[in-house]
Length: 143
Length: 143
DNA sequence: AGAATTAATCACATCATCATGATGAACACA
DNA sequence: TGTGTTCATCATGATGATGTGATTAATTCT
Image (cartoon, rainbow over all chains, first blue to last red; front, side, top):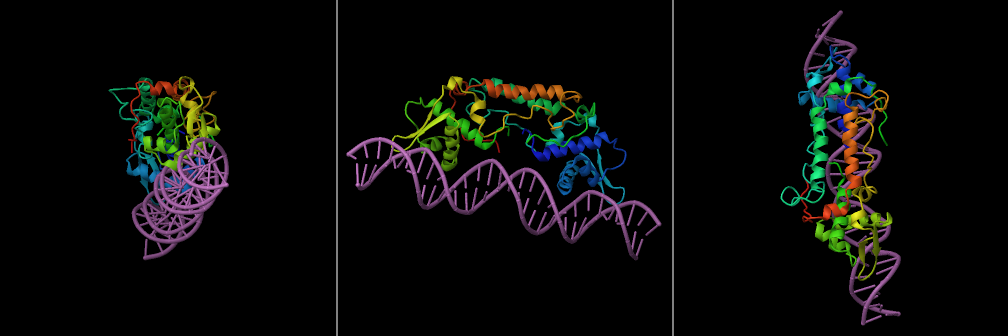
């Protein structure tokens, strides 16, 4: 899988918040229930996102989590960043050094194109893009 | 990382064999030493590749591992297959189902292009492609 | 046959990821 | 003030990926 389970949870939670209008905070219990994701695990993930500034958390009655950012200007990369290393090894697929710039292997240029297209996708796609035609968020993950 | 450590070891080992001419078998000790990779761990990996038919192993003196295939017709995908699931989730990035074909989200088509370009790269690039201008295989992996 | 060499295998150890249950800390509201 | 609600955090466990050391099995060569 290209994203860790944690990053997928993070994305789906942010998406869930974006699709819920975002007027009042949503509780962890509701988000976890809606996504069918482990509650306490999600709680930690949301906490990390709050510390990263993407979410605002409020405790006590009527508390919960809210987006602090406009989904139209929130990239997938930003949501993923606290969990997965997005660098995606822009150099060689195998982590070679001699293969970076000076003496590229025959596949080097093609790989660079491919890997940078993945990066570009994550940087340029917004949460709003995913939300549009808001297909329901489904549990099924490839085994 | 897009590939597991194990898959990277597998690729580098096959590459090492391809670059060594392949006339006589190479011992695990030599490959592991040349790549600076854990010996016994590599041994298991090579064993799996032998069972997959990519390598031939011979025991006893003058034994070791040899490629059974022409590097020019051996794709990265074939080398990786026994270790990493190459499927790369051709559907939605988030594993949604409703987002597959009928009601794609706004990002769906772009992601499908990106993910299929990764798949195409792995399927179409050969070991020989990597070996050409045979940049030395270096240990450094992005932390 | 016997000794040396080499892969194959076994038995663990270590670590990160993913996950659960219980408890603590902040907050709203009567 | 007190009570319930909610996030925050702690302690622990399960699992798989990665890695290590010792032993076994097959093969070659003398």
